[in-house]
Amino acid sequence: MAAQFELEILTPERQFFVGLAEAIVLPSIDGSYGVQAGHEPVVIAVEPGELQYQIDGTWHRAAVGQGFAEIMPEYVILLAATAEHPEEIDEARARRAKERAEERLRQKQSLQEYYRSKAALARAMARLKTRVK
Image (tube, rainbow, N blue to C red; front, side, top):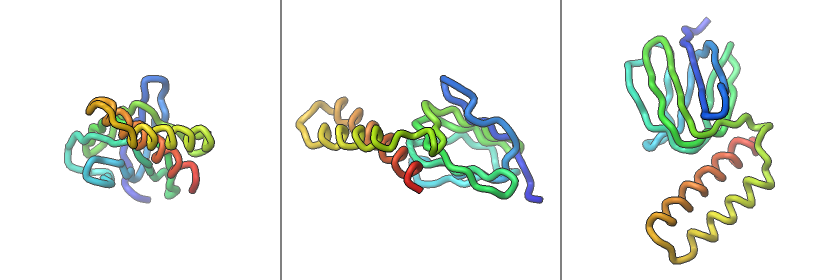
């Protein structure tokens, strides 16, 4: 049996997951960030994307929003704006959100609106990627 660590995935609305895990792969600014038990202490920024975590040898997926993770040798706490299981994602709604964000990006807009549109597009893409598999 692989070494385990305590994993907590929390959003403002709910405890998405609390339990033991063997590994987690987080979407970060620099790409995917993998963690196993005994990892060096670190705090990382989490970007909207697909999260993967392993429990009893089985990989589970979720779409997560922006947040951060505290990683310690014996636990990982992920605080994210959102977290959704693939079956919770409304694919049609996510496609509409993607289209709206892409349209806003094509328009001339303020820098602030540009970044909001980029964030909305990233969230929609993460939801679609997680839902489609």
